[in-house]
Length: 304
Image 1 (cartoon, rainbow, N blue to C red):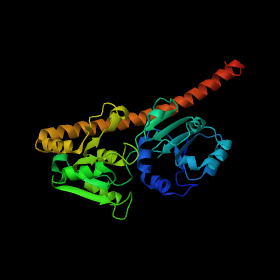
Image 2: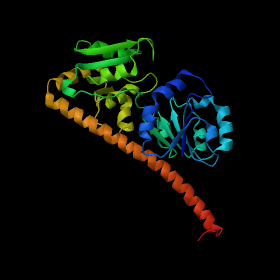
Image 3: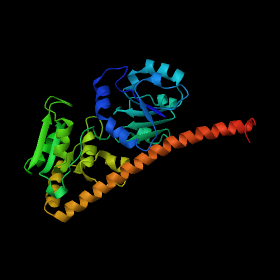
Image 4: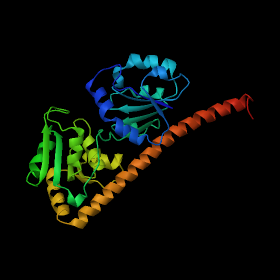
């Protein structure tokens, strides 16, 4: 199988380049049980080969894919972005299987689609401190949009020491570098995670989990109960609830160690299961193809 990263090709855009730089570590992490070779150019892929293409803003690449499918027909897709589900669902039928970010109910029951977390951005995550030895009680690193994030800051600003870094826009000038960001995350006990701009998911949740933080998340319409069933993540409806939760855990060493351990263990197990599921989906589709081919050969007596 050949993997080609296509998000930044044929359509130069902020998000295409963002995914090329920041999503690669996460995607390669969850594909770690799939045997593939990465290539940079479609000319390096024979028409008979199986392809795993990673892409975003697909709805803007109609002409590319029209030409692409004339040559290749054994293709799996990892579809990044598309928070609002703009993609034409019929388009997905061109692929053997689709792994897409941003879980939506409209895709959840489609057997040809597997929804995956948006994951964490690429950066150095190491030298994580023990949860009870971390410098900051909580942090918020990101943009302020909507009432929820203002309330998050307002309700919890007096819990100190904290680390707050507010940017005017996503990826703005005063944003921390990825390494600086993870250094703060790795020295913080609780990460307060509000919902995203268009969708409940944000990268911050998975960055917190990867950094060993204890996330406290908004859970609109029980989204995270449905998408990540069985998770032990602390969920709230209003941000004044977080103040009491942080105070309760921060005062009791055993409680904070227990919630940290259960959250970390769940995340490691979840990622392992996700990797196995992706591998098995690809293997299963390949098996069905081989089985169909074998049945046809038997029918016409080419094999016994």
